[in-house]
Amino acid sequence: MKHRNPYSKIKPDLNKPYTTVYLIRHANPDYSLQEKLGDKNMPLSKEGIKQAKLLAKNLAKREIEKVYSSEFTRSKETAEFFAKELKTKTIINKRLNEIDWVNWHRIKYFNTCETRRPTRLKNYKELDAKLDKMQVKGRRLLWDIYRKNKSKRVALFCHGNIIKSIVTGVLNADVIGFLSLEIFQSSITKLIIDSKGYVKINHINEVSHLPKPPSEDLFITLLYE
Image (cartoon, rainbow, N blue to C red; front, side):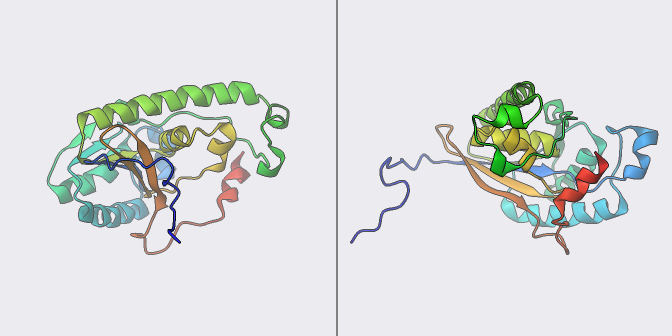
């Protein structure tokens, strides 16, 4: 009997060459300086510098050709370690800047069928509409990067919310999906885009370069609500 894979029915063409986009969240910043310098100017912590160096070595194996970063100091510093490794310049793109999101909520996935979500999450429609706008920005950013870098491998050093916006946009996820996704600091998320613009998520949150993985107790962040 001939085995069939999930793509047997659509029989996709192998539309090479592919464009590879790495979405990289900055390494750990020095939060003790946030009040003094502001969120945008917060530099990496000592631990963050160690993470950035290890991240650079991981990325050096991937034949990346171009490096982009947001305007935020923690992102630029993380990118610079890799740019030096690659012996290239970092391209600053303000569209990679962090997206402000203050509406954090705990919501039970098991109680959120589509018909009940508006009643289970306060301001669901308003928050989902806000996410839609963020996803549109992320989609346009990704298209612009793809259009300018076809068949290349590029690294985008940015922030958790912009990465979540792009990933949930590809998945067509709503605000429940956005609130349920965590992007680790110093992590690598990989997208593959074929020559006709079809996007595949290869992996999310790779942190194999770190000597010890991030805490998996993601709920601890909720203590600061």
